[in-house]
Length: 233
Ligand SMILES: Nc1nc2c(c(=O)[nH]1)N[C@H]1C(S)=C(S)[C@@H](COP(=O)(O)O)O[C@H]1N2
Ligand SMILES: [Mo]
Image (cartoon, rainbow, N blue to C red; front, side, top):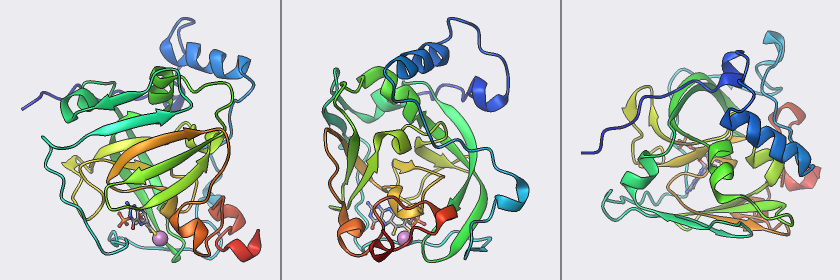
């Protein structure tokens, strides 16, 4: 078995000062210079924590298209393709060898349940972006999963500071039902944007709707604006 590196808490989320030459600072400077920095700020007042029309649950419901692919770790591959300087194709040990972060975030599902305080381990999307280096024209991503599911995101939503490729939940390996071995979590959007069983991230120079976005759900999916259905766009 591969030893997993110790999780770290990202400096900006921990509220600490960043050393001037830290990796995160360099990333932020690079993104700011490229003029694409950044929405998806996560700090909200307590009375705004639960989005309108949502109710809290304690358990964690399972929702998907009904086909839950079992991918043995030695067959698992993860690819980043399209409009990036450095495309990648990783096996499982390579994925785990990259910076591990631990975050606690909320889930908001369009079917009206929300679940607070989920503890995740994985790779920050910001750290992935550092490695793959989106090209100047890159504006969107399409996520492709092992079950054939797709979902699309604008790059500034994908680059939210709390978006993560996760492989552990509450200290345990993510179960197959919840998207294990690895899924995306984008806490500031409805949960259908958080692709389970993530196989490939395609960087694009134009938007294109994914599975639910084609089938009646909103293209953007902000829970605080109740962006549930495409009829509301
Ligand atoms: N690959 C894949 N990802 C998916 C889905 C899916 O069917 N396939 N369903 C989405 C929907 S609609 C929701 S609400 C969440 C549910 O995640 P959960 O089962 O872990 O609660 O996964 C999202 N990601
Ligand atoms: Mo959903």
